[in-house]
Image 1 (tube, rainbow, N blue to C red):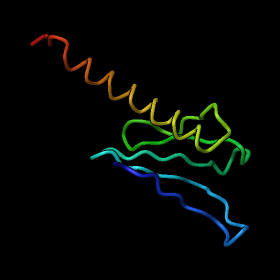
Image 2 (image 1 turned 90 degrees about the vertical axis):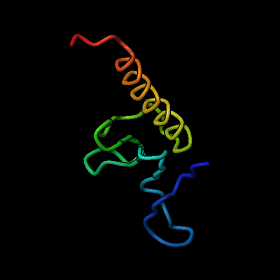
Image 3 (image 1 turned 180 degrees about the horizontal axis):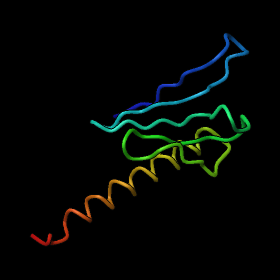
Image 4 (image 1 turned 180 degrees about the vertical axis):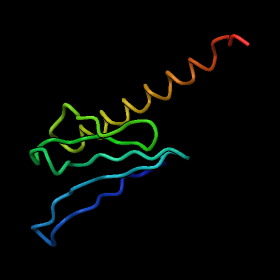
Length: 88
C-alpha cells in the first residue's frame, strides 16, 4: 500500500510539514504549500495531470484525502474517454 512521505522544514518541535507526497504506480501526487499564498492553504499537484490546484481543506490529512479524490476523478475521466468509440 502506498504511503505518504512528508517533507518538513525546521527541526524537533519546530518542524512543520511543507509538503507530502505519494506514488500510485506511475502517478505521483503532492499536497503542498505555495510561496505566494498564506501558509494555511494547501495545494495539490500531479505531473501532467494536475497543476497547483487549491484545496478546500486547511487540515493536511483532509487535504490529502481531497487531493486523492481529485486525482481519481481525473484518471476516471480519462478512462471513460478512452472507452468511448473513436472516430477513425
